[in-house]
Structures are given as structure tokens and as C-alpha cells.
Image (cartoon, rainbow, N blue to C red):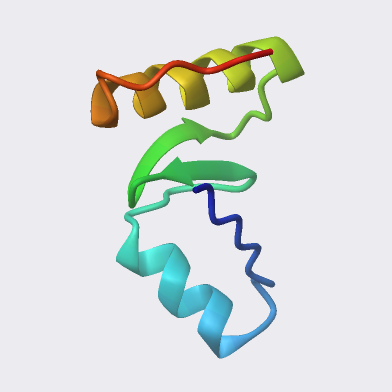
Length: 66
């Protein structure tokens, strides 16, 4: 399961989350509470590969069908 969340940096909740994950700049993407992309939004294929890599690491016996 993939859970996607977006925080508004104009709110206290957004600022709190920004600090919790250790973000340094915007935009940023975190996965598994780890900053993966900072100051950049990757292309769709790059982002897809990162998600698949993390899925496979957590689920070595499962396969993904296109």
C-alpha cells in the first residue's frame, strides 16, 4: 500500500512535518520518512523506479504486474 500525503507549508502542521523529516528546502519528496528528493521534483519514470525499488526491498517475494 502506498500512502500519499501533502503538507501546506503555510500551516503549523506543514512546518512541523517539514522539520520532522529533516527537509532543508522546497520542493521535496520524502519516502519512508526519509528525504529522497530535495529542491527538485523528479520525472515520472525516475519517481516510479524509486517507488518500485523501495517496494521490492520491503516485499522481496512479491511481484508487480504492469
